[in-house]
Length: 261
Image 1 (tube, rainbow, N blue to C red):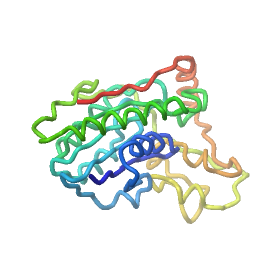
Image 2: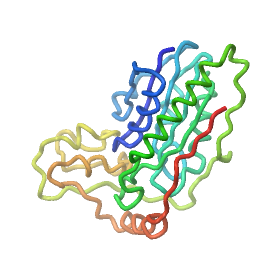
Image 3: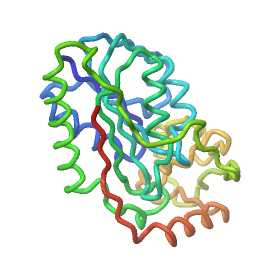
Image 4: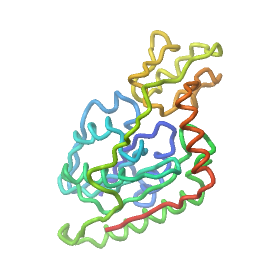
């Protein structure tokens, strides 16, 4: 069985978990890193001979809308799939269910699902350093468990329904943060790292100091990747939200959650 990874991972948290699960199942992994916009132009097609492990970050309790739109171009044919969500230590709410439903409506059969904490993109004080060594050990054990289940399958009719937490209709936040984007300070050296790594092409490649707030998804990849700390979020609403998250969830340790059919 060919093991395929599909992941969006702006700050590498999701990728770590997905790869660790995959490495427990096969020594040969076929990666589809869809973090950059140009890697989401074409759909993907899989067969019953494939296993897909798909991982996404959680945004406000949901799968990011632009990823749902892309995943509807990913087609399976009785293709087994493992679902992975990572969240910044608050809650993943309906994201795992939404990811499952999206793929199962497109020809996939869920055999496992999991939710891991990843250090929040807004601050290192939420889920600091996660996924950590213990998390990745759990991810590998989860991969081993799913592999054993898959190896025992003689016919797909034996696969029961994969139950995961969540509600439908999915959660919709009443108050949403207005469009905003990182600002560029005088440290900028025009290296272009930010623009070339932006998942939504929100940063101008003609002028790296310009960021389109309508396209920005606040993943903070540009802030974390900048070698001279030239990008920063100064918006008061953003700072208030970050402080709210820190005050309410920074002292909580959420363990990985695992589901197997």
